[in-house]
Figure (cartoon, rainbow, N blue to C red):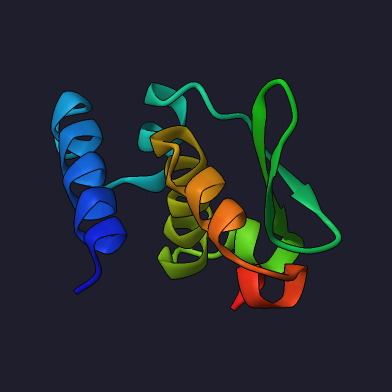
Length: 97
């Protein structure tokens, strides 16, 4: 595993521990103070404040993979690792990969 990957996992574990290892998406998002709204597609938008949008079918679904995936995007930004990855890549396509 890469050094950044290991650092991210450590960050996620610290944040998750600080929120009682919450597994319910809605409670975790509230605890992290991340608003969640239905939208045309599922994404995490980081403006001054992080907001998660979920496709209507995902928003209403009991399944949590996509929802937790979006939380991970917020944590990647908050960890500072997203900025490091952006700095280390040569193009937007390489960064997205």
